[in-house]
Image (tube, rainbow, N blue to C red; front, side, top):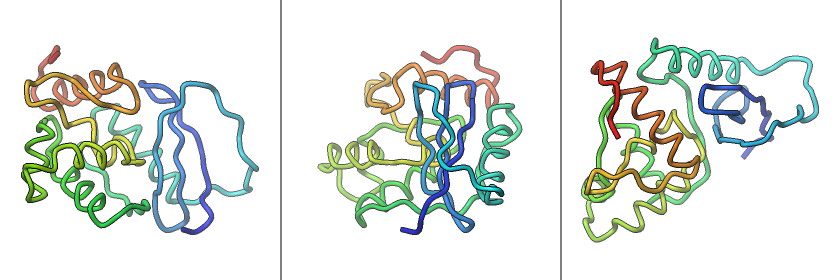
Length: 165
């Protein structure tokens, strides 16, 4: 993967690190501590600017789908899971079992959950939309409070629902 450039965005769910190149976004991750700029570049790649702008639109309720080229390293199976995540509509959730079904193997629930957890492009590749079969919030690398916030935000925008969990 090419040398990545990073920037930070103070979102409603905390600090996000956004990394990419002139051509794609490779990472959107949560950080619980303030970060110092890493080797300032005179000009931020337009791709990172576009990503921050689209995230701001998402948090303001003005964007439901991201339009950014993405590139993250992973196995073919992980990429198949991440592709399925991109198919989950805004304001909807599916279970890990449903996600396994979508990949073609109901016995692969744990493998699907593992691939979901290895997604490094949070929010844009909406791994937060995957919940337990019992409708419980489980498994989110950014913390369950963030998962809850993101789901409630989307439900409020999509359906006018104030509290989901």
